[in-house]
Image 1: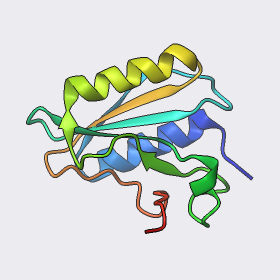
Image 2: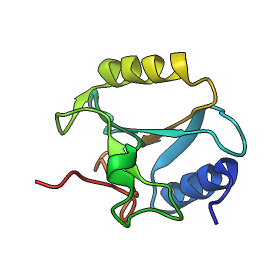
Image 3: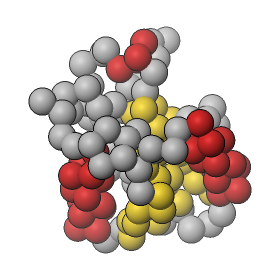
Image 4: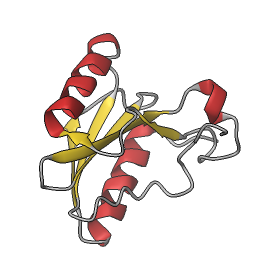
Length: 120
């Protein structure tokens, strides 16, 4: 059974805070079923952005009852403005999406076990 998005987001934020990172909800989506976008900021002007993994990747056994993530850009790190542009584009066609921003100088995302990656 999949957790409601609101509970998952709150637990994720708490998990990030426990390890010393700052995390906050930037955009509140649908409480039960909104997609989650996670922006990781290293506080040096660079960021990573994660969102729902495509269905072709989501079926590889990762995630918590179906929730899995994929990086939404090719480069390891991109400029924060570029990440914000991707978020704006995603939110323009999915107003129910949540946006969580994490500030962590190490760039740790805390999504271990939830990242779906393409086969190489």
